[in-house]
Length: 162
Image 1 (cartoon, rainbow, N blue to C red):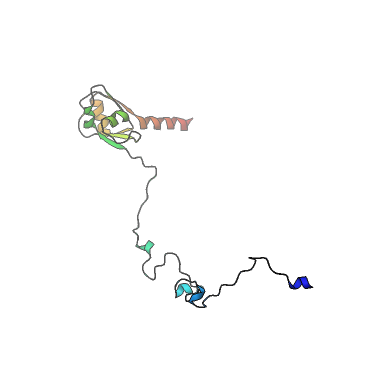
Image 2 (tube, helix red, strand yellow):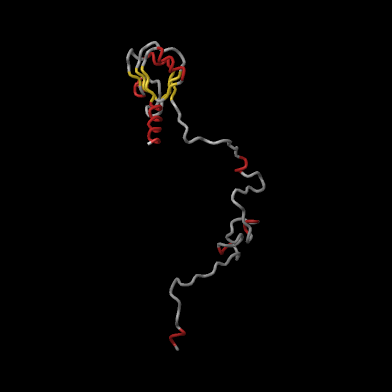
């Protein structure tokens, strides 16, 4: 019987209860560990995310963007046909050679030839796309033209048919 009277819990098994609002010296006096006073200090007094005290919400103040961004859009680097006169007669024109002459900014982005100006030299042109007016002017100057996008499209059509 003597042993039962002397039983004690293990050290750290029990914790003293937080004594809220029992003076400043307790460390949890005044506001009782709830931060401020008012709605936030009350039980059940919760403020929804985005609430700004009765003002117009921040997300409502933001501009609304209409439409959408086409993720499949292809951005071509434009090169006018008059710029191709910088090359020598019979030169091969592709993305690498255009980049070397600083006519385009990136080698791996597709190139489109536009019809502004005149072509005075006979060239071998290999690009992704060509406008209709540029195509006429290239044929008029008796230059050879290879459109890479057209080749890709024709390959895809043959694969679909098979």
